[in-house]
Amino acid sequence: MKLFSNVKASASGFALVALISVSSGFLEATPAVAKAPAKIQPATLTSAAIAVPDRYSADAAGQIFNEGGNAVDAAVAIAFTLAVTYPDAGNIGGGGFMTLYVDGKPYFLDYRERAPLAATKNMYLDDKGNVVKDMSLIGYRAVGVPGTVEGMWEAQRRFGKLKWKQVLAPAIHYARDGFEVSQKLQERRDGAAKSFAGRTNFDTYFSNLKQGVNFKQPDLAAVLQRISDHGAKDFYSGKTADLIADAMRGHGLITKADLEQYKAVWREPVTADWNGYRVITAPPPSSGGVGLVQLLKMKADLAADFNGVPLNSAQYVHLIAEIEKRVFADRAQYLGDPDFYKVPVAQLIDDAYLAKRAAEVNPDTPSGTKSVQPGLGTSMPEKAETTHYSVIDKWGNAVSNTYTLNGPFGSGVVVDRAGIVLNDEMDDFSVKPGVANMFGVVGSDANAIEPQKRPLSSMDPTILTKDGKVALVIGTPGGSRIFTSIFQVITNIYDFDMPLPDAVAAMRFHHQLLPPDTIFWEPYKPIEGELATQIEAKGYKLEGQRFNGDIQVIKVNGNTPEAVADPRGRGVTRLFQ
Ligand code: DON
Image 1 (cartoon, rainbow, N blue to C red):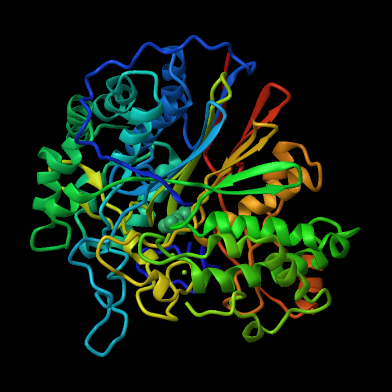
Image 2: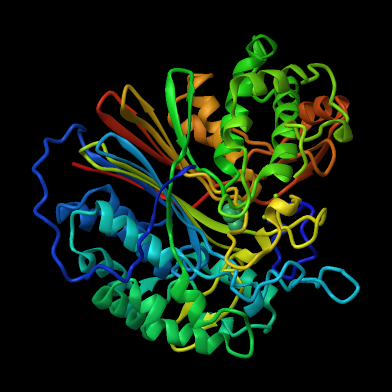
């Protein structure tokens, strides 16, 4: 059983949009300047709420709300805290996406990593044109230019109410004074250490990440203190930038110029009307939002076929797999960084196009894999540790944030004298056409490596609104399983009227065109017995995977938020009156 299928034989061991404005960068503002006094707004909700991956980040959010912060302040404090207390995925050495709904308007912030200036299309191929095992996954050359610090700076600068140093304070505390390591975190550490197998300096920093230990990270505390004192510019052009460039010299591609030129980008989210809701979701360079909208709309188009089909029955699995086949065919062909390739987003989520695609679904038997081609008629795809959290404040502002190092503890490289774990996001590029990445998905030129390009993602922080008010804040890790997991939970809630905890706990499955006619199941709710027999009788192979998401979701019922953390993970929820 693998975590993800078709994984490159990786030692890492887990076979687990139009632009609104371009960020003017971190160099302009002075972090020490106090915000203008916030307008006193009446609360519209009975409480603020969070669904987050660990208890320390929950405490950090509580502190921020106590100090009068809003959802964006809390989200930024959570991100920095998780970089300390959830170092397998929380990060300042990675990147991600933030979907926001602030004062009744949607926003999307892309702080995804970029390829270094010296990156080349064939940088992971040997002289015979074969992919060099693990090179895009482990070690210095796997690292993309990190975006998290700049992303948090941008978000907080634009929408936060508190002073910058207030949102850094909890993270600095946990780095300097330590936090107690959980069993799950030790398990992640042990797994990662095995896969890095002494090929990186991972053990120098994390050999003592053992259950029950009060784990302190003094180098990281110093970095966070500098970021608190000087803003994002410390990371991109100051002392921390020097430490990153020094660590890379002679090993990897990232230079000071790469850091200085990094920009986060405010993009227009993908939006769609579905079932009386406005879906606000991730644009390229994520495939997640396009994929989610395609899934939701095609399922609605096929209402007659779904009529009377019980949730998660063999016929249900078949119909969803048929839809997923078409979504993943489009993903492989058309999706990439929109700053490098014109992604036909409007066409891909067009109602008439999706109705036509849905009409090609064979209700009886799996469509031949080869017969399912990208649907727009013109020619033109991701490893695994990510984390998601959802936040809403009492004024109804929401943040849905997914960020990642890609694999657990990323590339396994830790910046000397800084304690920053660096990502291995370069593996999300299509390193060679037709060669699957860690998640078993393939890609085309749209996702080929180019300097400063962002690798295609599946991360999909999503918000649903109704009548201009936030109804749902949702997201998950899981690589290419991300948007199929979100889709299934949304469907469980709204199409099957399931209570939120049940909707999240229900069995999930996954299909992605390749490998052909394969349905992935999860240990949490395995597909077995009679159901397995029925699905196989339809022509599918069943394959186990170790992981199928860690949903963190908030649903607003009337004016009362309800938060659920996936029972598959170590997340916690809280409400703050
Ligand atoms: O951006 C992406 O789609 C991947 N790098 C996400 C990795 C991930 O979700 C790992 N989680 N288990």
